[in-house]
Length: 118
Image (cartoon, rainbow, N blue to C red; front, side):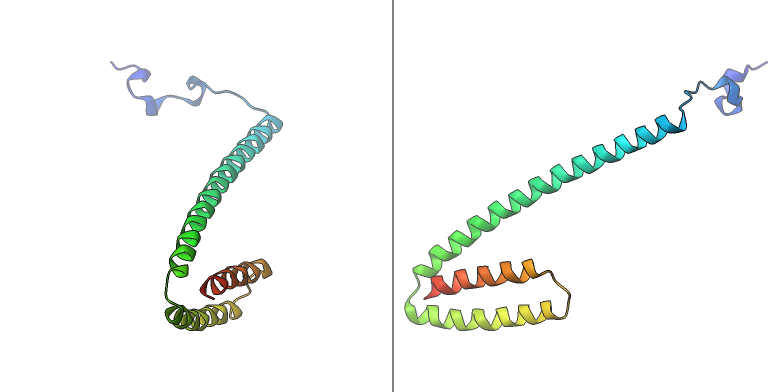
């Protein structure tokens, strides 16, 4: 003869230990879990943004250093090509509703590199 403990799926609800939680406690636990998750996500995203910013700063400075060592005739050709390509990128942005800060940052970077090419 087998006992009920031999097959856990046959245990009755009353034999499974449970912890009763009031609706208020459940809501607080859920809110705390949500806040903890949002905090963790914010930290991870913040770190990723800072790391991406550092990478872009290094790439930007490397590019500026390289551009200053090119002959003037080559810089003029690069500036023209760069302006054409940026115009194309900006037209893509016109088709979408991008935030003003995007356009501002884009133009700031474009002007930075055009100044280096002079």
